[in-house]
Amino acid sequence: MDYLNFVLWFALACITIHLLLTIANKGSEKTRKNLPPGPPSLPVIGNLFNLGTKPHISLTELAKKYGPLMTLQLGCLPTVIISSGAVAKEALQKNDISFSNRMILDGVRALGHHEKSVVWLPVGSSQWRTLRKICNSHVFSSSRLDASQSLRRNKVKDLLLYVEKCSQAGVAVDICQVAFTTSLNLLSSTFFSVDLGDPSSQFAREFKRTSRDITEEIGKPNIADYFPILQRIDPQGIRRRTSVHFGKIMSLFKTMIEQRLQRKKQAGSIQGNDVLDSLLGINQEKSKEIESLNIPNLLLDLFAGGTDTTSSTLEWAMAELLHNPDKLKKVKAELYENIGQGNLVEEPDISRLPYLQAVIKETFRLHPAVPFLIPRKVDSDVKLSGFTVPKKAQVLINVWAIGRDPDVWKNPNSFEPERFMGSHIDLKGHDFELIPFGAGRRICPGLPLAIRMLHLMLGSLIHGFDWKLEGGITPEKIDMEEKFGISLQKAQRLHAIPVHV
Image (cartoon, rainbow, N blue to C red):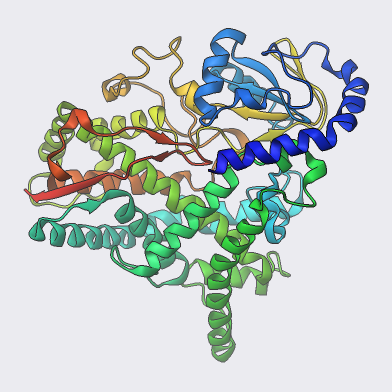
């Protein structure tokens, strides 16, 4: 229904702005010289219908014909698609500054979020540098993550206790939901020293629903992005609905901040016991380096990015292992040999579990948390692979296509963790064949925490339990269909019954 609504609004927009665009296009013909190749476009609408309902797949197919650097005209918006690791390296490493800023999607303008967000602020701004420094120093630094190992261990223990109860009752576990709740509790304990939910809590389900609503709204094709003249009227209501979703989450954060400030006011100082204390301490002690009013926006970025994508990746990893029982046996054998039956998986153990690490890498290769890196834009003409990326163009890096490039990966559509055994390729943005977290100065700041949590949760679930599919479904019958959005979700949720080892 959302796609049909988009088409209807799109048709209406085409009629109303046809003349304006015709005039504008005549004046812009000169800028079209030396653009990367691409499919022919229709008047006014350009190549919008080439996107289809699953753009990551549609654009991968087009790239087979037009090459790894390709141009599409999406309404008023010239768009360049990068579909290979080699071209992505040239853009994000050799021309990092030119490709660092992001195209502001109309949906994220809700409540002015783009003006306070570490995700959307331009890299040249002092505010972005401050927020990024805070993330690196006070949230995701190695020292802070090392110091919080016991916290993650306790959250995983909570997860295993819940799964044990499900095992005793013989009921299936919603893998994505429990992974989401574990990630949520980890972040909330780290930031606020409280758990915001347990696997069966209504709050955790509501928070997850709101987070997913945000990613779905922002991930929808939005006619206002392709025809900026329509942004004032928000024809599909995407910005309006996103405002409601943003407001729900930020209202919670504001309440927690106000309560903390009241307690600190009574105590007379800020001690720095958790991340929120640190953020408020920065505000108090360093000439308001980050305003209290901006903290909810930072928290929104970190919580939305750190829960939905992590839980989705874990669900895909479990689905692939259950879909490929021989791979699951290899992971279990490695865990049994290195951890021992009855022992808990600990973070220091991860370095001794190369096959588990390979499973995570292979999951990211086949099912990147975001199929396209958040859209970039260029502020001036840029030369790339012998072509010109024109000023004000949107740049999409198709991570899904890069992970399935047959020129790089043998049997690219098969789940084969063995391809990473003994491989130097990592997830840290240095190897452009595999960049699920991005690369360059815009690489996801939460990468260090996500990697720790994914290995710890997946290893613990596999080592602690055997798993069988709900309803007697056989491994080959698991539905592996994708649901497109800013994050790449599994269309059918994975429900599996844990069996105590």
